[in-house]
Amino acid sequence: MILNPKSNLFEITLTAQKQSIYQWMQQCRLATLSLFQKVDQATFSCQAHPNFSPIGWHLGHIGYTEALWILEHLAGEFPQHLLPYRRLYAADGLPKAERRNLPSLEETLSLLDDVRSRVFQYLSICPLENQERLWRWLLQHESQHCETIAIVLELQKSNPSFNSSNSPAATSKLSPIEKHANSAEMIHIPAGSFQCGSNSINALDNEQPQHEIFLNSYWIDRYPVTQQQYRQFIEAEGYRIATYWHPEGWQWIAKCQIQQPRYWKNSLEYDHYPVCGISWYEADAYARFMGKRLPTEFEWEKAAAWNPTTQQQTNFNWQTAAVNSTQISSTTAKSPPQAPNDCYYMLGNCWEWTSSKFQPYIGFVAYPYKGYSQAYFDNQHYVLRGGSWATLHWTIRPTFRNWYYPQTQEIFSSFRCASDTQ
Image (cartoon, one colour):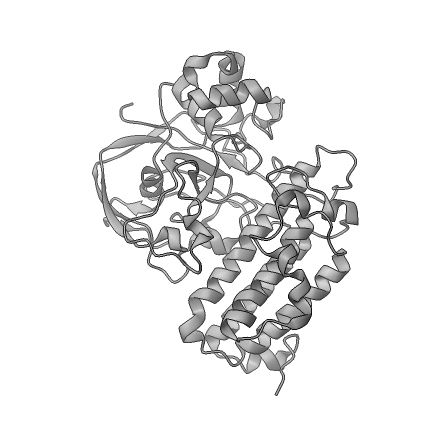
């Protein structure tokens, strides 16, 4: 029997775990499509920045990737009528600059509906116990591209030629740091071993395997750096003093005339918001200016997840612990979650830069294909942790590793400082 994925019959006939996969994929798709309300073709196909593809490409790529991994790799048949889209939507197909000649939004939505219908038909008969990791990877794949779409819509705001009034506002979506908080306060993390990484079925290849690591004692900011704090660096002419900067960062700000973070709001109204749209170079320079440094990714993870009382990872539901709602169409912020080491706002506000370069853990095994993470183990990308307001909850967890070049300002990024002494 061919099941209609839109009918109640489809959901009723699935096992409990298949129902979960079905519901999660539907919820994720609704979040993705919410970003395309009132989007015109110019916005749909605009390349807002050389490092990012148009939002229309990301939408088509989501559908193509489902077809590739579920219909071709698992079900054994890639639909023939989708073959003309392969070069356009494959990650290793066209260069980003050539991805602007796109089908209409209506045609793309039709493609996604067709693929999703076939995918759900296969879900009803698949041996999920042998495939669940791939289904969960696909869910996170769409979640990541959904956040990228939110970033590109934000970048389009700087171009008045495009109608992007429906796009989310990067700063207004942030949760402000409590005004009574001492934003400069630091928390002491004692020396000791902890289990970093994850062996969960949700964990991406670069999060695995979980392993023990010893860290010396250190201090870390209780809160992310606010605009009020960062303004001190700007007003002290920090962008003109080479000693604060990594040599390549100094060349970058001179060449690109960088004078402030990408989403900087030059208003006292935003003093208690975390600085947003900041590059690794800027975060590193500010830390030097303050006589501090950026935390390593392991220091960040221990502060976020390790319970000093139980000597175990905190048993949190991280999806609900994020400070902001992880449905990106919402603007409602929750009260700030508190990590077991008394740090705040570590998940779901802004991604936070670390001092660590993106490298594999010992025992790394590529999944689901060699290039997914491995292509970025190039000693040029730095790790960010924590997730932003635009990160869907399927990728909110303290072990999740994001990675970007150090000059990247376009993402929803912030940071907190660390120090060996206070």
